[in-house]
Amino acid sequence: MKKGAKLWRLLSVIFITTLIVMITFFYGVMTKQTIKEVRKNQEESLLALGKQLSIEDQVIHALRNGQTTEALERYTVQVGEIHQLDFVVIMDMEGIRLTHPDLKKIGKHFEGGDELLALKGNEHISVSKGSLGESLRGFVPVFDHGEQIGVVAMGIKLTSLSSLVNRTKKDYTMSVVLSVGFGLILAVGVAYYLKKQLHDLEPREIAQLLEERNAMLEETKDAIVVIDKEQTILLANIEATLMYEKMLNKKAELVGRKLSELLIFQERLTIESKTEQFYQQNGQDYFVSIAPIKVRKKDIGHVVFLKNATETFIIAEQLVSTTTYASALQSQSHEFMNKMHVIYGLVDLEDYASLQQYLADILKPEKEFAHRLAILVRNPVLAGFLSGERMKFSEIKTQLIVEIYPEIPPNQRDEDTQNLLAIYRYIHRFFLEQPLPEEMVQRIEYKEDTLTTTYSFAYSKEQLTRFELEFYTSYLMTLLNNAQATIHWENQQDNWLLLIVTVHYEGVKDDKRTNH
Image (cartoon, rainbow, N blue to C red):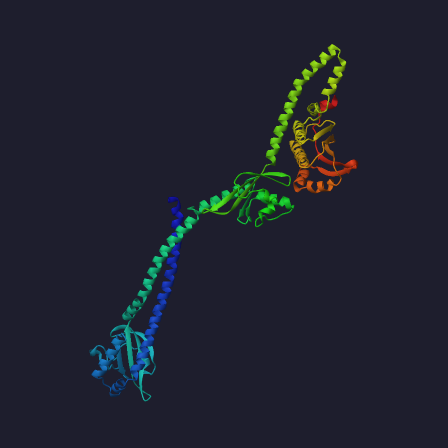
């Protein structure tokens, strides 16, 4: 909980602070507007009331006679109480009060000095200090038959006006308090919701996880894509994008495309399966792993891992080929002494007919293949590979006859050997997927840092076009480019097809053998 409290507190403080600032701002604006509105309404009420009093008969009568009456005094007091005014004063043209809430003030001059404008016939509002203190005042002149005979003055003390404003603000204050309380609850709720949406992670932890995820996706050698339920690619790492670009031979964006555009034979895969599946495309092998992506126990898509299995198979094949070649050489060394003993015995017995038959038998190409490889192919990796591939063809009842001339020296660069084997492996895999005749010849000739391999076998002429269409892929083009190689098909008479491969092969110069 301590780990998750930081973001919780941060979100709550930010949300609450924003809420308080906004409410305080609007509260200030509303309060200012309320004060302005209350004062405006009060000013309008003062002038309206003054106009009403200015046409009262008893007011006009009192001003004409220059003296007040007890009824007029009671009337002005009642009007003031009804309209919540602090005073209603009627004065003559000399500014002498005829009425006042304080009877002692009657007959005395009006205080404040702001009545002069009204005595000149103009109604107006002012704030001034009089006998009852500072107040908001309204002045309305009284006319009789077009002649001004006095002034009606009404006022409310500023303290009373403030009380009126405070009563009006009280309703707003209560609303603000309720809003702040509701906002606090909402802030805590939103912070809690966001925190859970982020799986109780802090911002820096989220950033770290994002960087780690990006590093894993981009640095891995496996192609990785994320797809939604409609199998649209939402995310692809660099390796997946490169794989797609090699298919198109141009720059292209993979995100937003369907998975079927990356995996051409998608129907061979089971998307819902969590087990590792084997997949082939463009002459390359892949191990495909598909895992569902769940959010709150709901499937929202899948993540697809494509591991290039070609290198794995290459290493496995090399191991098998090397083991087979080593075993063959070991058996040959043991058999050599046995054969020598048999030959010595037949010579000693002077059984030359049996000796001739025995020599013919042991010198058959089939039995001397490993021996010829050991003599003619001085690159053990290539020799082991040829031995293993020959066994693969024999399993499908096709004899692969390997002819080598002259001897093949070791390669100066292991990389060139691997490139050569990759081309051989691609060609052999293509052949193994086709119906083949009983015999196929592989002739390998080394000359001036160039290794020329010719495959020849009997096949119908009509199949050449189909072979060419199925044989050439972008993967093969990449292999040929890496090995500085060329490849082409030829059709000879008697329905013989030739596949000729020329590869750069820089052999190691053996001075001792040359001098000998």
